[in-house]
Length: 99
Image (cartoon, rainbow, N blue to C red; front, side):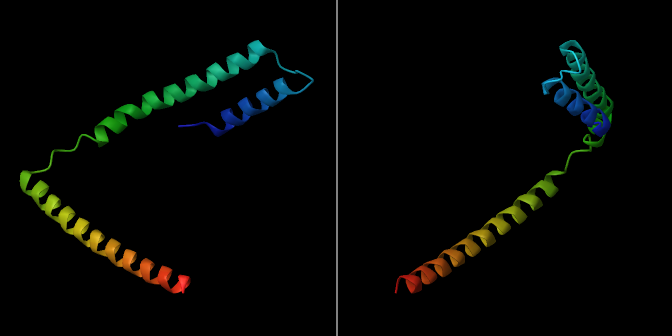
């Protein structure tokens, strides 16, 4: 999306403007910023059709959704078990460190 060369040019213009020499005028700096933003905007516009096309996959069947929900519930239970085990271990370590 971002043009590194354009970004470096913009950075150099800003540094030149902010230095005491003021090599570039504010009008040039504004134009450079607008040009760079427009290049990003054009890149986004060019990327948008590809993004929309790649994300327009057919929908998932109900059976797949049910299967995914069941898997998710199973994984959530597993994570809860791991969480309680970690809590238990933490409490044991805390008790040992206090003693």
